[in-house]
Image 1 (cartoon, each protein chain N blue to C red):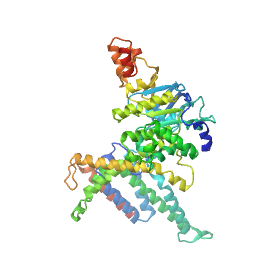
Image 2 (cartoon, chains in turn brown, red):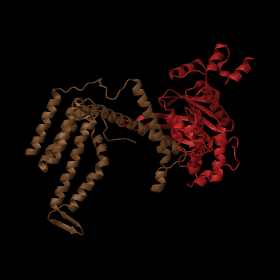
Image 3 (tube, rainbow over the protein chains, first blue to last red):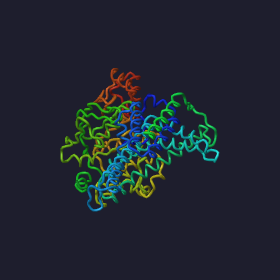
Image 4 (cartoon, rainbow over the protein chains, first blue to last red):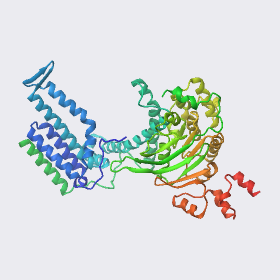
Length: 260
Length: 293
C-alpha cells in the first residue's frame, strides 16, 4: 500500500536545493498562467518548461506516472465530456453525441492542460520535503497573522498530519493482516458486507490514533512546546541567487507563454 | 471454500483439544522481498527448516533479521517469491492447503492493539464466526479459549476489551487466536512489554498448549523463555538461517549467538560457571533446584 500524493523523492538536484518559498511561488504563478492562457501555443511553452524542470529534478519518470495515475480517470472524463458536449460544427452526430473538430481540439487542449498542471505540481512535491513545504507556506502566510490567523500552528498541524500518513498506513496494513489471519476477508461480499468487515480494522485504528495523538501532545509539552510562542528553526529558510533566478526564469516563461 | 468445510477438521465435537494433533511445518528455500520504491529489500533468503508435529522452535535473531516476515509468510499473508511452505506436507497446489492454513494461528506483535469488539466474548468469537462455525460450536470454543488464558468466561466474557489491563488484553488477543483451535501456533514476540507475573502466566499457557500437542513457532528475543519453552532453535541473520536444530552451547555456537546480538540462557551460563555440562543445563529454576539439591 503506498501513498503517492505529495510524495517526496530524496535527491540533490538544483531543484531539490531551491528555497521552498521560491518553488511554491513559481509553481503557483505557472498554474495560474496555465489557466489564464487558452491557446495551444502558450500551453506548449508551459509544457516544455515543466518537462525541462522535471528533467532537471533527476526524478525517474515512473514517479510522475505514479502521481498521475489516480488522476487518469479525471483526464479521461474531461476529454470525453468535451468531445461530446463541446459546441462546433459536427462532422458526426448520433443521438445527443455531436463530434466536431472544435470539440476534439478543446478536449485535447483541456486534457493536456491537466497533465501539465499535474506535472508542475509533481515537480514541487517530489523535490520538496513536506516539512520544508509547510515551513515555506507558513512563511508566506505570515501577513495573515495580523488577522490573528495562527499560521505557525496551522503549519505544524499540517506537518504532523503529513508525517503520520505513512505511519497510519503501516498500522492499517498490520491490523488488516492480523484480522485476515483470523479469517476476515475484505474483498468478498456486497457493499454492506464489505463496510461491515471494516469495523474490526477501523476501531483499532482510531483507538491507536487517539492514543498516539494524546502521547504526542504530552511529549510535545514535555519538550516545552507552547502554542503561540515564537519558534526558532534548525534549518532557517534562506533564499539565494538561485531562487531569484528561478523566479525570473518563471516570469520569463509565463510571459513567453502569454505572448506566443 | 465454505466455512463449514473448513470447520470440519478444526473444531472437534468434544470440547478441549485432542492430544498430539500438531501440524508439521516445512519451509523449503523460502525467499521473500519487500517492494520498495527504489529496489526490493530482501527479507528472507532460502530459508529451509522442518518443525515436527507437536515440536517447539524458538525463532531468534537481531531486530530486522526476518522473524516477523517468516511468520507472516508461513501464515500465508505474504506469498513466498521462491520456495514453498508445506503444512502437513501439503503445498499451495494441494486442495487441502486453504483448510490447513486456517489451522495456523498467528499472534501478532502487541496483538492487544487489534481488539475491536464491544465485549471480550465477541472479540474472541470473531475468528470462529469468520470460519463459519455454527454458534453452538463457537460458544464452547470461546469459553475454552478464555479459560485457557486465565480469563474465565463467567467473569470476563461480558467485559469491554478496553477496560482490561494491558496483560489481560494481551491474553484476550491470544484467546482470539486459540479459539480457532490452531494446530500450529505462531507467536511474534509475545512477551514484550509484559510485567513479570504476566510473562510467567503466558509461558504457562504456552507450556499447556505444547503439552496438548500444538506445534509452536515462537519468535522472541528472550533467551531464557526460549530455552524454557522450545526444544529447538532457529537463528536468522539478514534473512538467512545461520543456525538450526537442537540447542548447541559449544564455544562456536556461543560466538554465533553473540554475533547475532543474542546471549545464552541464564541457566546455561550458570551451569557452565558451576563447571557442569552446559548442554545438560536445566530449563527452569525448579529443575535447577532439583539438580542442585
